[in-house]
Image 1 (cartoon, rainbow, N blue to C red):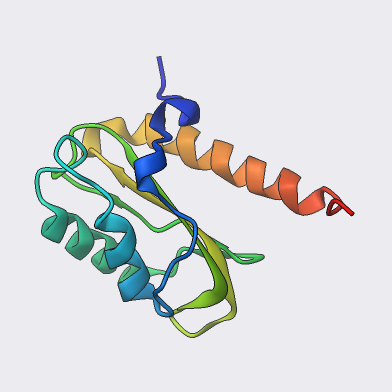
Image 2: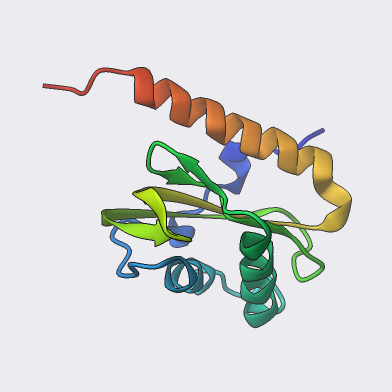
Amino acid sequence: MPTRVIDLLNPQHVVLDLVARNEPDALRELVATFGQGATNDRTALLRDLIAREQLQSTNAGNGVAFPHARTDVVERIVLAIGRSRAGVVFRDTEPPVHLLFLIGTPPAMVRDYLVCIGTLARLCRMLAKTPAAA
């Protein structure tokens, strides 16, 4: 059975007020939320995320980014979520990102990753269409 997003959510991996203003620092801040059990090497996970980001920005537009990496340093899919009121600059793309979904995926779990990112993208689209509460 594919991994469900609800099963990936962990309050310890949510940063509601990111301090970082640029992409590498934001990735570093989110990776730092992972403890034992999430990854066996935070430094390698960060390196893999930055390397993936250098290939192509994961800024999806509308203030949302999905930084991700397929990596051997996680045994299961891991998810960290960050919110930045000021915004994080992703490779000089505009506008800045305010919501980040950082995903680390074992190479063998590509299908689960696709389900996860698809679900998150659909949720973001639905929320973007919802009128703001008064």
